[in-house]
Amino acid sequence: MASATFEAPAAPPAGVFSERNMRWYLGGQLVSLTGSLLQSAVLSLLIIKIVGRDGAALWVGTVGALNLAPGAILGPFAGLLLDGYSKKGILIMTGILGAAQSATLALLVFENRITIGEIIALAALMGFVNAIDGPGRNAIVKDAVLDPRNVRAASKWFTSLYNIAMLAGPGCAGYLVLTVGYGGTFVLNCLSFVVLVVALLKMRMVACHGNGLAVARWVSTANRGMGYVLGNPGIRLCVLLSSVVTGCGFSYYALLAVIARDMFGGGPIVYSRLAASSGAGTLLGSFIVIVFDRHCSHRTFLAAGTGILGGSLLALSRTGSVPVALVLIFVIGASVMVSFSTLRSSITHLSDPKLMGIVMGVAFSFFYGSMTVGYFGGGYVANRWGCPFEIALCGTILIVTAAAIPFLPGVGALDAKH
Image (tube, rainbow, N blue to C red; front, side):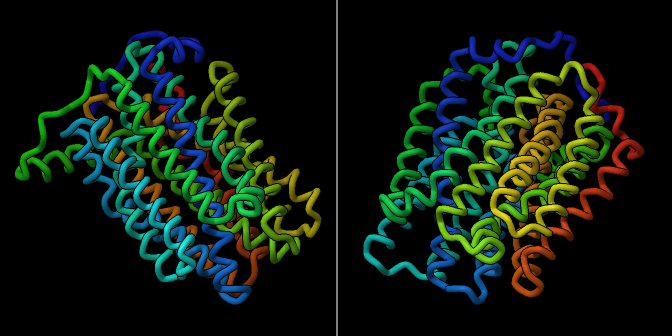
């Protein structure tokens, strides 16, 4: 199926901030993502505190996987929901549910009756919310942007918010645990969802689909969306490569609290230093993509970013020095974001706006599936053979992938002008 093309020339990235909708959306998302990543980091530290040394890697990986697993199954259906109803309304609802989950965690901690079982249950429940919220946060960008020339830049800036949040959230996690406690950090995340809901209410949408979907049309719409993704060489390649990059490139990050303890003998503060280094690296990666997007081919970004990512992971697996690890994790953060941001913005740019929901649903299904395997598999491997072995395995897979990128079918579509 041929994809729709858009003839408008590329606009400078700064043009995004001239639009009221995007100022509200990007600001609200920055606060919300920071709170969500803060909570994820604090949950890892809390799990280690609850279960102790034995089995910590497996439990941390399992909780991370449960938070993502529903998205691997429900991604395409979430896309149908987003295409059939108001994306803004759906995101407001998921924001309210996210706030409720954080408030529940805070209450359990304040009452001193939090257990690993309750953490697992809440993570699984939040996974169903994330299955809709994740693709929704991306799919709404194309509706919220008024000038079509700003779509690609808006997608890149949205991805960049995640990097800022990685620096601000996990980078402060250890210090906040020592100052406001575990419960206090969950309260902060609850408030961050409130900020996002307010920002969404302030947005004035002009392209929301709100006609609903009759049950009889769900299957045909799903088939159409899947056929569109699989039939578009560029989108298909981006979805598959993003699965490899996220599954192998992010799995170490889910275990970073365990890595800080087992490889470097540190606690919450060492973890926060490592997480902050990763966040700073992702900021650099986003800056590189935004600034040099018009001067360097996307296949070059992908091959270089993925190759450097794999090599840095291999080097990290062989060091026991915190200063060296900080440098390597900074490079890992930059390289993974060069690859991931390029893939995500390419999917947005190549997609028909009428099918953005289902495209993002399918993309996130693969994304969540690879992350689920990466988190659970990484936790299992690290628990059995150690963190260095798990990191080295992921690095090797990424190096092989980087070498193959220039020869993969559909790679030329990434640099096509639309």
